[in-house]
Image 1 (cartoon, helix red, strand yellow):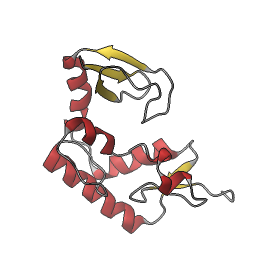
Image 2: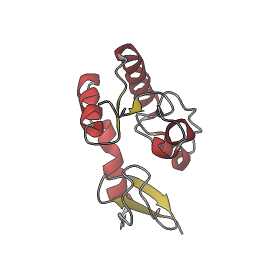
Image 3: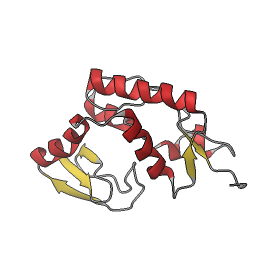
Image 4: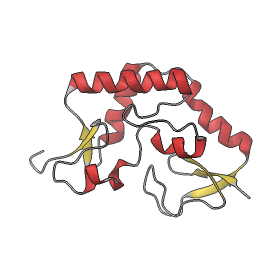
Length: 144
């Protein structure tokens, strides 16, 4: 029987028989706790609180600040991506990455919420100058 699980580090919600061993969002090991459907919906409804693009852009800068990746410096590209995310939120309820197709299967689509777990994708891990699917995040260079 499927249950709701919440990562106690980043609040990632997972629906399944058991939780992932490693959180796909924050990469923390054994971080999930079982929660009620009500609590899971409450965590997921945070997306319903209106956050403007400027606040979200700042949040992704903070998210990337101490990590091995950074926000792409191409401002035009970032603005276009943010527009796509906010359009997806308006049309589908969550800030799905604009570079991925939504399957309308809630469990599968949760893996497309920005930022997705791009650290495991070939576009990022197998390249020296890797980036996430849409290019929102790129690897930090050794010159930084």
